[in-house]
Amino acid sequence: YTQSIGFIGTTKPSLGFVFGSQKDVRFDAARNGWLTAYDEFNEQFIQRTNKQLNITATAQPVRDLTIDLLADRQFSSSFQENYEIDGGEYISQAPNTFGNFSISTVMIGTSFSKSDEFESKNFETFKDNRIVVADRLFSDRSSPDEGVDENGYPLRYGPTSQDVILPAFFAAYTGQDVNRVNLDAFRDIPIPNWNIKYTGLMRIKSFKKKFKRFSLSHGYRSAYSINTFQTNLERSQLINDNLPPVDPDTQDFLPENIINNVVLTDQFNPLIRVDFEMQNSLSVLAEVGTDRAYSFSFDNNLLTEITGQDYTLGLGYRFKDVKFVTNIGGQKQRLKGDLNLKADFTLRDNITII
Image: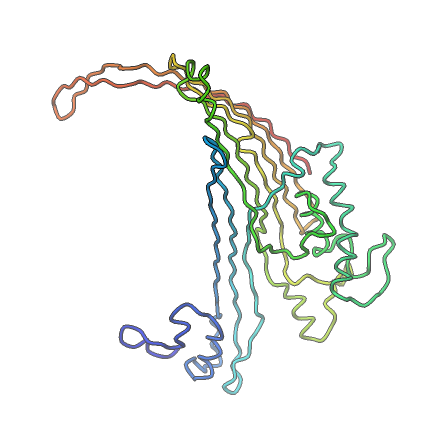
């Protein structure tokens, strides 16, 4: 960019750009002669986008019952390309976009499905979903009918195609209907997760006589994440050469973006939590939690499943009005306050299945 920014700024390259718009700013600057015409210039044009949506809400449907809802969506991408300058004309070279994505979702429909090293209902559903997704892609994209392969998949949409695997994986492990699941890699609407707390038992006289406080809690978190995606330059080059964008090894259509791996996580944190303090100052915490993480790698079609359970027991005691002596600033002072002792014990069991 060869222009002066002017005194305390200017409206160049555009007034929209000053207020945050990125629309056509590079082409406007080039047309107005504000960019260098040096033909050996090799700095990349880089455009970064970060979008973050956070939604929180609190509901109290009944007295002493509080429900916190949380939903979020994060999208980050960087677009970059070089330019070739030919006779004053700026020609785009190898545009490339890469980034990551995450959105809150719900997987509670499969949270208690059996899965171990011997069998997995969700994994079998995932494998069965692929041919349904392949047929949907073939129909939605109005692809020419080239027949089916030996496994019944329409040609160009094989069982290891990224476009086939991702929706099949998402549907199987979130419990969605494969005939209705979104076929796009990116979702627009985050689904809320929640925290629930109930303290109403303290309104019962028998509880009030024995306890100073008593609460029940439950929480759930789940997310769908694409750790890295980037433009499929091989596909772009084939299209530019007026060739079909087909993988020479699998004969499947090449995806628009290359995704290294996708991750689905959910956790009951906690599944149930009981926290109370008795009138004799003894406090007890009991908690059960579970979590799951499914990571699918498109580099080698490998699914890694990590599940865990943890059990926590906490004990505490409050010694009231403990007297102690301090020597602050050279002056001896006698203070009085409560002394809280607390110990938590946790047992956790993890299993990883590939």
